[in-house]
Length: 183
Ligand SMILES: [Zn+2]
Image (tube, rainbow, N blue to C red; front, side):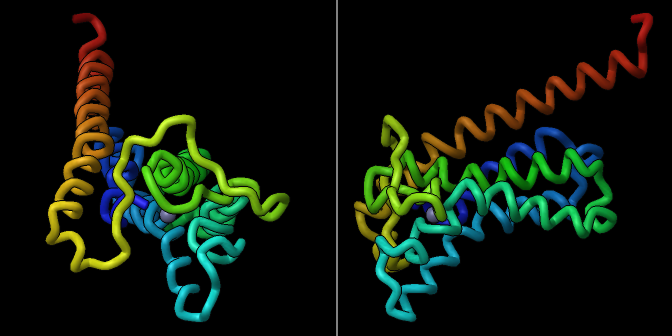
């Protein structure tokens, strides 16, 4: 996995880039929470569940079914988000799905269980560029830990911030044209 904070980069950059009119604060917070949620499966280690088990790390919480179903259930709280239902569903699905996509381009661990419950197979993307993050926090203070942080800044945060600024500029041009249609 990339570090759990780096998973939040996708909803943060996308949400801030699109702006609070499209992605209100509550929806942004829910997207951030969902982008990190799949790694709650590491708690299963405490109960003796093995990494490769379908309920182990990168198992069912990283599946496509989970990524599409959870945002659908979130629509029950439609009014709370103060956004259009399609926006809510799309933003939460992208946030959740981005988690397993990022995991699939890390250089270590097992792949992600995208096809649970139909298959136990673990998948990787065709290329791996993000250095896999250690489970223990203490390892971040080692050269290996710094290399992980550097790799996440380069492959996730930097492209994310570029997209965010691009979206912000697009939004600015679009709203300026709507405010001054004749100019
Ligand atoms: Zn993960």
